[in-house]
Image 1 (spheres, rainbow, N blue to C red):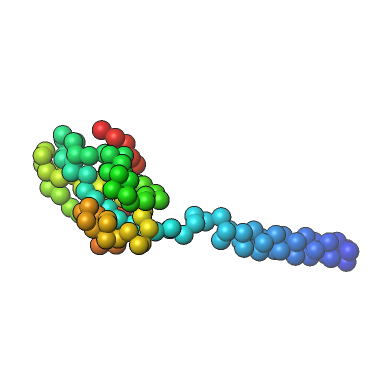
Image 2 (image 1 turned 90 degrees about the vertical axis):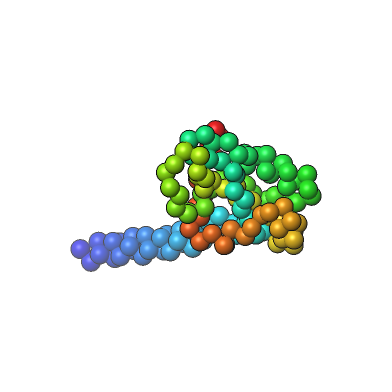
Length: 127
């Protein structure tokens, strides 16, 4: 019976060691830190009718202007809008660009995403 307890204790120690090692790996598996600053621009779409520009169109405009786009996403600005056809729907394009291109981004009406504390990424389903 004494041998059985030692074997069980050994398994527990091994299990704890494995958990500790796996927990340490978890940090390395997370998304890499952003490689730039995140900016947004309203898509100009309206409730009921859609319209506006797509994120792909805006990304192409940025690239033509010489801005490096590291990552693109769709989102909503997090603001409340009355539910009325023809009113803004709050959809935005989110672009991660190098921090040293902030002046170029501002010249193209992009604003830091940090100015929209309630903004959230959403699916990029094009209308």
